[in-house]
Image (cartoon, rainbow, N blue to C red; front, side, top):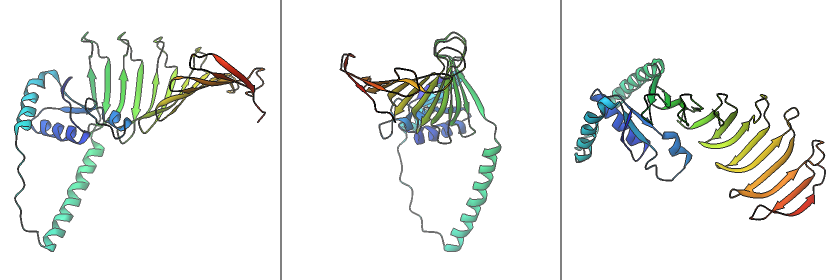
Length: 264
C-alpha cells in the first residue's frame, strides 16, 4: 500500500475513499484513532488515505481532479408535500435497514504494508467493512516478527494492546487505553508470567510506576513522576506489604528528604 493523500479530517478521508471506490479503486483511511487521541488539535498529518501501489497513479489523477473542481451551490427546489415527504422517509428507512444488514454481513478486510521496502510485511491491519480499524500488528524492529498488536473500539480508537518490548518473541507487556490515550500498562519483566511492574498514566502522560512482589501483587516501590522526572518515591523498607517511607527528589534526581509514612 502507498500513501495517497492526507485528509484534513476522517470525514474527508472517507468521502474521498468512497469517491475512489466508485472508480474501481480500493482505498483505506488510517489514523482515525490518532485523531481521537489528541482531542481538539488539528488532525493534519495523522490521517492517511492509502491505496495499492498499482492504483496509485490513477488514484492521484482522481484526487487532483477533485481538488480542481469548484463547489457549486445546489439549485433551490420547492419543498415536497407532506405525503411525498412521508413516502420518501419510509423508503429511506427501508434502504437504510438493507444497507445496515449488508454491512453487518460483509467480511472484514486485511491490509499489509512494507515500510522499509524489504519485501516483508511489517504492518498488518484488520479493517471493518466500513474501513475502520479493528486490529493492527507491527514489526517495530524489522526482524520479520510482529512485536506489537492493538485492538480498536467501535469509534476506531485504540482500546487495548500487547507488546514485545525486548523483542524475544514473547508479549510481556499489556496495555489499556481510554479515549485513545494509554491508561495502564502491566509488564512481566523477568519472564515468569507474573506481573511485576505497573505503569499508570493520566491523560496519556506517565505519572506512576509501581514495582510489585509477583506472588502477592503488593507494591514494594512506587515512583511518582512529574513532567517526566521523579517527584517522590514510596518504599516498603521491610517488605511487609506496607509502604512505610517516602523519599523526596529534586530536579537532579537526588533524594533531598525522607519521611516515615503513617500506617494505613
